[in-house]
Image 1 (cartoon, rainbow, N blue to C red):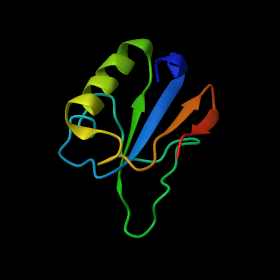
Image 2: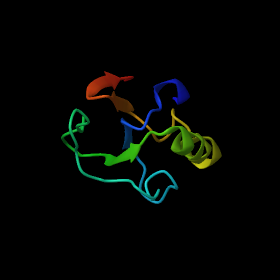
Image 3: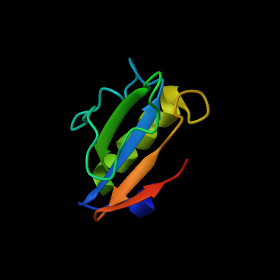
Image 4: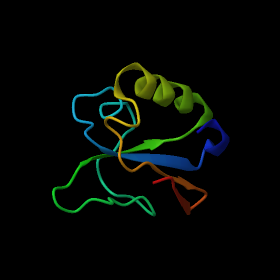
Length: 89
């Protein structure tokens, strides 16, 4: 994740995120933005877009490692760097 971090990067997570630190982080949005779109339609999963700066990447990683974990809660991570989408799932 840190390799993708720039002042112009954003990262989106989709899954069972409500009530987690990741879902409530400062600077986050729950709306689709640019290349970062929801992958789920029915039922829609929780969705959050966060700025992926060098400073924010450590906070995002901490939120994932502490309580969430990719396999249990996060289903579709994706990233946008300089306007280009990068989808991991």
